[in-house]
Image (cartoon, rainbow, N blue to C red; front, side, top):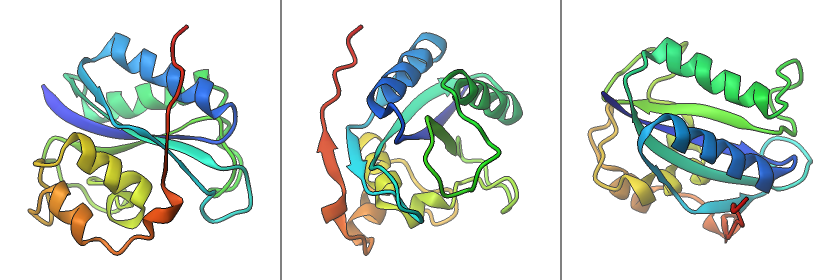
Length: 163
């Protein structure tokens, strides 16, 4: 079993899509843990604010199988991949970590967004503070507390995911 972490983001029907995706992950995987959900401004384009969170779980899927499953979840939630990289989306799921696997830039593991965006690193540090970054060998608590992020754009929100 591999411990994995994924980031979730949405700015189209965001609450419904984040809640639904989290339910799918809880139904499919073992020991699922979710960070708080944060609202952040759109990054790289003008658009509605995003809701973001990080989810961790264990899986026996290979990296390729897991990525296929995550793309399937995005498609189930109406994700269209033909648009610009920086655009509104129903659901964006990125594989952040797969155990201690390190792969090159093309495979992007550990995901470069961990160190780039507060809405990825801070929720990851919330649910996996002692987990170490496989390249930097520092735990996420340390990385979060030494990062130079403007956290004023990271607003915690409470979702009503009961259905």
